[in-house]
Image (tube, rainbow, N blue to C red):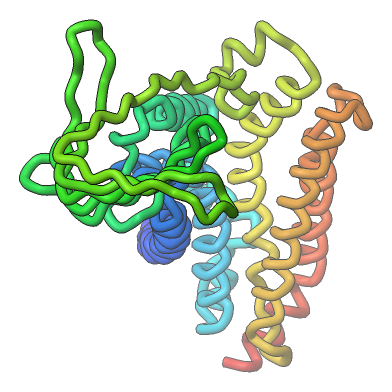
Length: 363
């Protein structure tokens, strides 16, 4: 009971710390990328927070699997390093005795990973695509952000607004470049606002401005000063693309059994399974030889995780491309890892007597 309680307590503490660090790194990276898109005008500034939430929810299954692996590895590595393993081995415990408490800690996390990968992550991707389509379907003026040059959806106008006044319907210091009938026009206005006609057409009303119009390359141009100038805002409908396999629900993947959908379904099912297998593999990988460097097992564990994760991605791509039979799919990678875990446990148990004597002499 003491052994189980102490191990679970340390696993929970290490997992919490590791998850916070990994989540902070992921959130920081996402914020930098999304703010860069917002600064360039490819993403609306008000959509940054929503996209951040959707993307973070999509990354959570991988983060939790990696958190579980690192937490088990760090906990047992510290036990080896501080010679606590000598106490547990002297009490009659073997390395296999750690499987039960580690699995008691890993199974709830794997269940959360399963819910995220099978239900929440596809839902987040679907909502993100719908939100992006909703933003792309906005009119040109609604998509304008202060201090950013914005091209219209029809690529025939460029807008620039210095600031909004009071409400977002009124703007100050407007610049607009347009091309009509092979003539290029440039307009400046001090104020502007949106209005809607009785027939439903929307207009950008420019006040107290000046328009320059002429043919590109020609010295002839005309200047028009105006107190009020109406620019019609052409409606735009975003082209909705077919949802990718990543955004489909698990029921849709099962109904439409294409190679791409089968590969995606196998990937989602493999995430909770990989979390459990990685937690098991961390038990024999956590051994620290007192005569060797303390970081050697951590390096080997990191390399093993990277190879395993990349092999799953490669197997998924091969199934989608028809290079690997769906019956094998990513399960072949998991099967190889199960054999590797069994070999590692056998090796550690076979060398346990000599390693125990070495640890006991060191103490």
